Length: 85
Image (cartoon, rainbow, N blue to C red; front, side, top):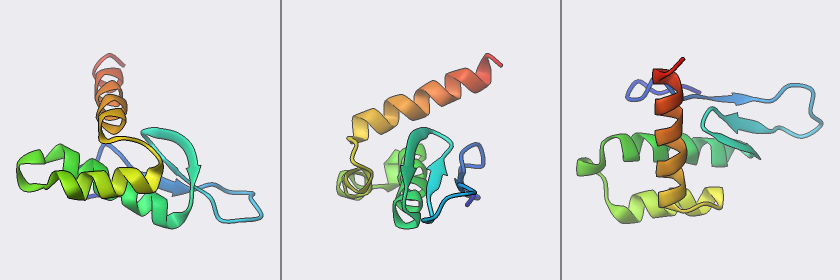
């Protein structure tokens, strides 16, 4: 899964698993496809906070079992890592 809005982050299906499992580029947790989709939506929401509601972001973060603040910290760290690599 990729995004036209935020091409630096993505989700992929983990191969070799009995059950479908997904991974986000910015969250080191195995997820369902629905959670991966929510994670992609969350990072899009957080990349354009002026057009998003806090409720939308919180709903997606809840689906991932994290807070919006944790998501922001993880995405910010990914941005810093890319900048320094």
